[in-house]
Figure: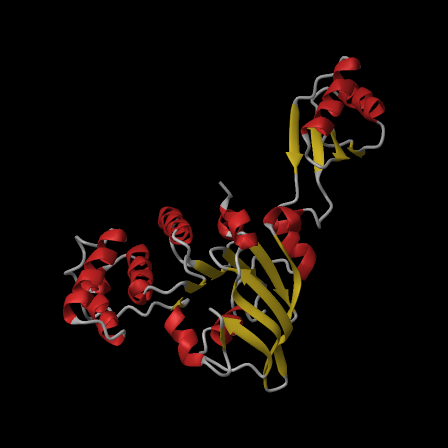
Length: 324
């Protein structure tokens, strides 16, 4: 049976864009970006402050118009069939659409009315989604009394009332505690297993690594790189093995035995380039064994998405959305 990633690779495009452009005054936010997102997959868009992640979501969800380029969502052209696009998608923004003055159930029924569901069908859909998102006990309580995680679950449940096949999630876990974030991740995985396509923007690199089939890094209005998490990590050099010693004599002998290493005489540590493979690590250990040397500490560092992000954007902070 094909994996989700393999299914995504074989699927038609749920979202495609060529040359999308957007400016605000003399500030170019999107400078001709191309996207192709297979149906039934998770696509993550990363970028530093002001990169335009939210602008991209707003264009693709028909909230604002692009200045140039073409895009199709669910097979419909953004420019000529915006209503058809809206009928096929759901959007959960950075800021909750939940009305805190009414109950969770009333929020759901209001959304059902907006989708022109009958009273009976609306109550059925609301009840199913409240149960799915573990909100039954809180359904009769004002949404203002909900925790941050509960509000985000209700927000996403409201998005699903119309049964969208493509969902845009703009930083859906910002501000959530680790448990609530992991709960949201599980919900997203379940949606994708049902065939839903998820377009995700996030300020958490770990989130993209955990969820996304493909990741794009947006920088200076352009896609700086795109691929699977593993493909992006291979773009960045810097993997290494670090050995630390407490015995200065063992440290010096190890430096001679291993050859090309970076020495830190003060910390008694050696660093040598590594791709993180088992074969290369075994070679290092075999050389130490042959010389009768035992390191006190061995650590392996392989590039992660943090390294990729910093290398591609030159930024020193984790990405956070600024441009809307």
